[in-house]
Length: 309
Image 1 (cartoon, rainbow, N blue to C red):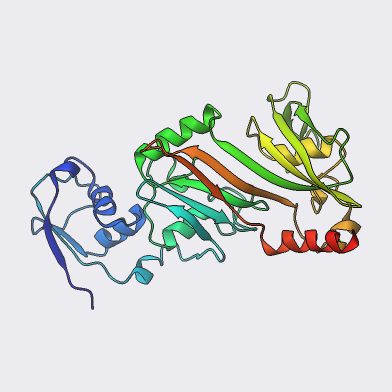
Image 2 (image 1 turned 90 degrees about the vertical axis):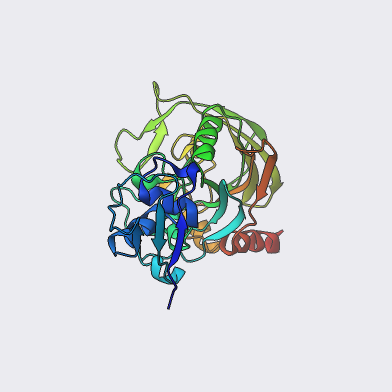
């Protein structure tokens, strides 16, 4: 049985909401802190407080924290395969698996990074919309790889600005059908929603400016492995631009990939992976470079192609 803890509220938390103060004191998610308050596990100066009550330095806080697994019941969804590549007090970089969205949204009922981190008991930044806590950039549900999430408010502000100013280095790997000619180049073509499909995007005159750089790093008989770097970050940008070159990502049947080749390579989604993420640490300024290895399904496809060479 967990023992209650009693302590004075640090002066540095003066004026914060109680749920925010508890999340910062004990490294809990804000939703977990709110659950504890609502369940009567918290008293403030001997009274039963509301989660929105403002705390004052020197007030006496008593709290009973159950085992972490109990706090993880809200939300109940645990993201299978969600791995942490790097974390400290300000940021966490996850290795996002396939089939996981960045955050909850209308029309998506599957697992999310936000829910997975909450289930681990990690505290995220409370800036932005409640369902997007800590999210400073996104990867498609079908795209795997390195994704940074802000834990502190400072990190959220600094990283959002870094992505907007394009100072974050994002390197993707993409396996595409055929052999792009030229083997390296830049695709500068505006992107907007597809004129006849709500689920797709397309190169459209008058769309949002979009720039993608690519370089062939290995050529197979039926496909090419590319390094891809983005200047802009439009939804589906890499997939749309490579399809516009008539070299869609292998497995990406939504954007015209050959289903026969997809089945041969064992692919149930686009071969696209956020391999490396580099940025200045929001608190220290130190350069952080995090690399994500290819997941099993993408490596299997390369192995099939290698066996043919």
